[in-house]
Image (cartoon, rainbow, N blue to C red; front, side, top):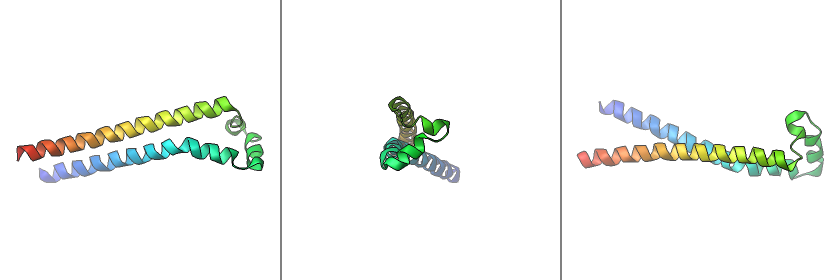
Length: 99
């Protein structure tokens, strides 16, 4: 039984760490996207002359909506990962108190 508990704990720790890592990447992606678009004028012109999703990157409303979606995704992933970490530590505390 302890092997199953440890395997479940390892899996829970891996999933929560993965969610937190993806949340951090999603949190920094609006800044990276803004830098990628506006760092060079020639690249900016090349991007906004592209097909549909890229042609709207030049406008502020599209960038704002995309940034809000990415920020919401970051909050969701970070909160899910934090909740799983909290569950894992709560389980460790309960197991420690029972011994």
